[in-house]
Length: 172
Length: 199
Image (cartoon, rainbow over all chains, first blue to last red; front, side, top):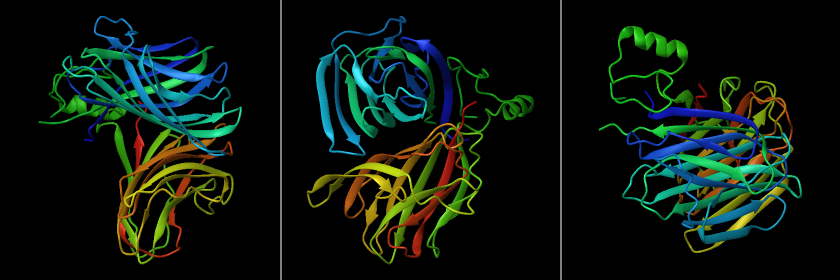
């Protein structure tokens, strides 16, 4: 049996944000999140925030990230921020229907004595210029037990979004 | 069984003990065996290409391709091409890429293209030196979407790489070819293709 375990699949349409709750637990330390559809009403940023064990979105100014935008048509651009209320953890999204690809690894979200870390690698259609790839690392600088994650665009809505969360099982 | 405990949103709850009937039901549901399904593993040694022609694109919208200890007698990049006719031919246009690399000798840089004939520069190694990498491939089975990849390679004896690529034709992809920039016969290595389960 492989050690990748599907925990949740979420599909939504015409929503301003997507919250995936009760997916992080003591059973896994590392999670894999995939996203294959991310159709936005307008081309903009994707952001994420963690959800605590009470079900509340953590929007305190405790997120840091560093990123690299990699257009296929021009030079690369670095991005970074500290103490933000969310993390630019996902990348720009496409506002068409050509598709999308994202793989995200999340580390120690449920551990109440550890910060929660994530890294993202994605590729997408950005209508203003063409196709881009994206890489980022991010951290929630709060030793808080998180049980879910919330994605939201900087403006507009998700016309369609699909994502799955898996746990990487470690057998003792 | 090692899968102990009840997960939130379990497809089928369990307490760590599987009875034969549960195994049959999990198999029927597609939940038995974990969510990383090996489609095919091939040795690449002795060939210039390695083809996957039964990729089960109708079952998976995310594939994982893993190349382990790939090497040849020439300096080479690992590369990928896609097919829309089950491997009878492989597409030679409409590939785009963006790659960041970092060298063990200190030089970092970027490489991009909007008019490539394949996904290339996935990793590099010198003659008779192995390298490894992994690639996630997205939406291959969708006739209405482009095909996307993200990839990452640990440092070989020369460089590390990560990046992404797009095959900018909305069509169903049903075969994948692994090849190398030198056109050389591989002298060692294994290519493994997995599907990431959706159910």
